[in-house]
View 1: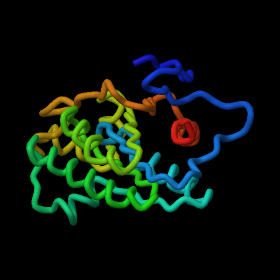
View 2: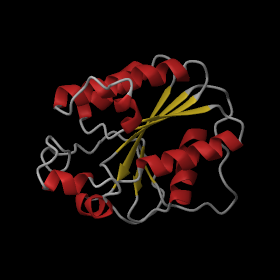
View 3: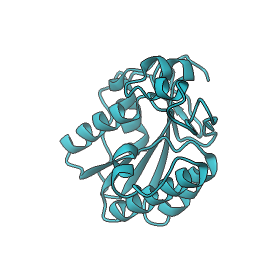
View 4: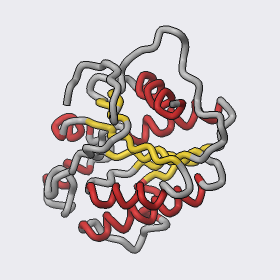
Length: 201
C-alpha cells in the first residue's frame, strides 16, 4: 500500500488528504447508506466508526453502528470462528444493515469481515436498497498486534484462541474498497473527513 497520504481519484480513495476550503458536507439527500468497514483486529475500525457517527449525527443524519463484537454477543451468539461462521456473521450483519438503511439511515458496520467472498455477498445484499461503501481500515499485522487493545493477539499467540485472523488464517485485503484508510499515517479526524467526502460524492 502507498503510505503517502494523498487523495487519489479512482475506485478507491486513499484517506489522509486535507482539504483547504472547509470540511466536506455529510450526505443530506436522505438516501440510506451502509458504510462497511473491514480490517484486522486493532486496525481502528470501531474508533473511526464512532467518530464518523458523531459527525453525521451532528449534521442531522440518523445513524446506527453495527459492531462485530456486539453482534457476536447477540445476533450471532450461535456462531463460531471458522470460515463458514465468519461468512455467516457478515451475511447477517449485511441483512441487518440493509433493513436499517432502507429506511434512510446511515449504517456503519465495523466488522473484521476478513474474506473477499463474504464482503462481496454483503454488497449484493445491500445494493438493491441502499448505497454500499466498502472501507478498508488498513494497518499491517505487526502494527495491529502491537496495539492489541483487547489482548486477542497475545491470547492467539499463546494458543488460547484458534482460527485467529492474521495468526492462523490470512486476512484478504479488499481490492474493491471504495475508501482505504491507512491508520499508520492517518489520524481519526482525517479519516472522518475522507469518509465524509466519499459519502458526499
